[in-house]
Image 1: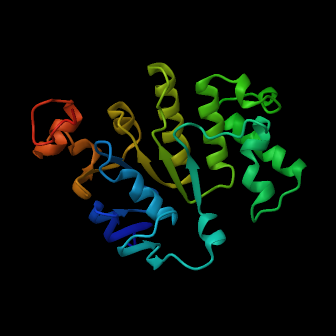
Image 2: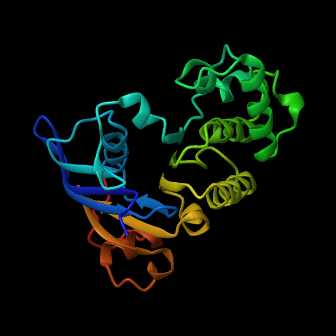
Length: 250
């Protein structure tokens, strides 16, 4: 079966710094892939390459077996994104944040229709309609993250990216967000790619895990095989051990 997303031998350097050194990855339709690895190993550059924010120096990125086309708007319409810091617009109300691309993007919804969609998506992430007219600054960190999730799914995307979805949240709220992500991805039948350092999140939302180290995919496989992979890099990372082939930056 043709993968939803395929990366073939992706390379990217910034000056003399080689960040990606031949990344090969496949994500099946409806699969939840979590990318792990230390800081500066190329996780974010991989995601930005798929989104077209960065142009690889070499390699090919395929969506549904086809190279990314010239119609950038149509291409990006397939994607939803939950940003690490929420990235909500402070000057817009909650519902306007959720409906932002529905009103201003290619959908061109009326404000009334977009507000209805926004309220429905807010309900889906556990927020009541009375939150819709509040502003991000009036919400807790956990509520802001839920608003970001509602925005990510507002346009019913086929692919959703999650960038460190539980950063800054307490363990209980992190568990709530992980559960919401898993439920929503399954309900929508969406393909998901997540970047995270949180191994609790990995185990909660991943079908498949890929570890990037030194610009290459060091290991990939089902989440249930992480503990018995036998790969020293993966074992050191998931156990947080100071001993192993990964050198700690001092």
